[in-house]
Image: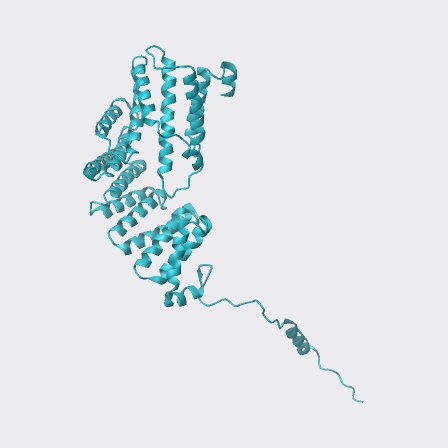
Length: 412
């Protein structure tokens, strides 16, 4: 970008294109969204300074402008997604909050104008790629707005599926499954659209099942497992057969991997949530306890996954009035939270309050807290070494007297 600006000038089409390339590079990396937005903003400034507008003949200018507005929208949508995640630590969160997300609709309308001009300037194959990018971005904007239902989304989904069938050369089924899963998630967030949402999940599962039957492979098994998992998550509210679908997903995942991996652990967590909501607390407890060692192995002892699991186990024990077991897991959770989040974090304070309540129970206080040190249960108190009287010197002198030979007395 520096050499381009020196060669062609700061306010040049070439320099704007260099900023576009930089923005794409940063978007492909994790935690570099602010940098991507900064570079695409510079490209947009050049576009406005050069007074470039949609034109019937200028292919390169229209194409560059399309890329700039597309990336502006993409950065804003990703910023909204990041900020909507709860209880997740996001790097550069202050910078992400500064990214403007109010111009998405305005930028999308301008993007449509450039797309219309490109239709007559590009060959059908290249244009179909840009048109698909536009459709997917429009879909992304819609499914990320859960405050108001988009009345046009059903038609948009049909157009996207038709475009995938017509123009996509690879992974057609995978792309359609992803669209159906995203659509299902969107629809079930609206009470009067739950049935339609579940139908989209069923479409995804049927496609994955068909592909696995026609072309069996570990990849297709995992795809089918994920579809079953997502469908089961969605059906927690309305279907009694959810538990079986979770177990089916776990079974399929295990066929592709000897050890429990991150995907299986996600299913375990959702299965535990399902059991909890259906008040099947013993099964929920079994699932959480089974997943805990693998979470420590994969994520580390101080990870959010381990802390949340310890908290959930403790909460279930507490609800079932098994106070000693509850104290043990909540104490472990508290120690981890204090280290990972700090003593003043609301999550740490909540666990501390629960422990203080448990300490008031005489049996728990006597059987657990009086026999614990740093959260580790002891069979008996450790010997205290402070102010200990040492008899080492006296013992040594006594030993010398025993080993000495008796004195030899003179007969005189």
